[in-house]
Length: 504
Image (cartoon, rainbow, N blue to C red; front, side):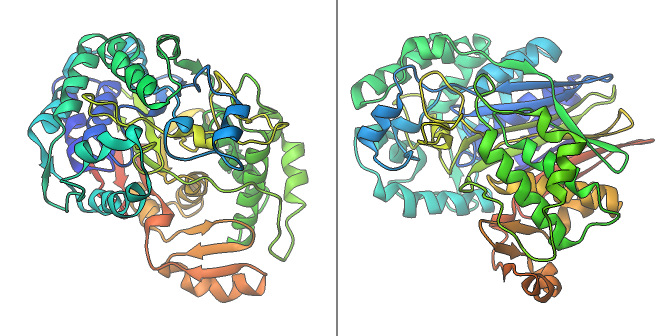
């Protein structure tokens, strides 16, 4: 089974399974394809996180990159007083996705690594019809974001990613020959080309010409990290996330708080989510310098946090919400292996920095740093920033239920909480759980709901929430899920995206 946010990527993963590959092979093939067929949301120059159930236990991979060694807080304050920039070289971090593909394959893959790039290379070289949701985001980037950027560092983006300044429309054929060449080199070198080969040299040369900070030693020194997943119990289930530098702990805190209620109300769910974000924004950073993690999931601490929830909407001091553009996918195979994988270049089209000849856009993950000197996530050299992207996994009594995830920046932990509630409390299948109307907490007392929850608006307002019914589904994220059954698997793919779930 393969479930992704874009049909062609799902096809690439399914093709890997049909050729005898396993769930990890399928996940890599789909992930590589997504960099081509959904470029505003992820890219070769982005990061990756994954959870892998190997048939017996869960493994976690943090394939996020670090900031350049030349990046300092003082330099950011000099060039961008008052805030971390979200476009351009100052927010570029080392791309981790290609090395993540290699590391997943080295540990669990079965097909030849280069074979997993075949579909992506064909789509990049020959073109493919752009899907509707992807086209909509592309148009926003071309019409609203890019026109405000100037300078040599951005000049290549328009040439590679537009038709003379215009974004491709839904159904139009778009190709990226530069990305095809880059993917061939990455495939043929077990990803080394990205970090010490021709692609690395092109990135560094562009940085040196246009004021960027990435250097050869930043790329050559990059490595992924295998990590132990973290979890919290919710009504006889275990919900798993990766530890920081991702925000998955926000979802776990919220679910740990909600587990103390016999049946939680919409008001309590929103308040629990606020508490999760308050702690995440205070403590999540590069794990080498971050604050407490497992202590935040202790039952005693969760009881204390639950006691803060009253009858009225509260303010718990959460930081500014993070925005983002991301892709999530999950896969499963006949041997019981399952993968939950997410990758992103952060905000739509990332930094908008495209090294000439590479066809790839570099991520703007450095925008996740803060400037507060006493915060563990303060910007600095060689650090991994706060990350929004989080894959998730559900077990029951230690036995796998399956992988799931919801992409969309600040929405991601909120989406995870709501999918778990729909699955465990409402006992819905994956598609029904993803179809269910959602709520979104933005900041302060602001809450948006989809039209399907309009009947709850008056009650939430009586409790002090500033509620609005959203006209667009974009803010509510996009997800996929696969649950194991006694007969095989059942999957769902997000109705708010161009997603597709397929199996055989």
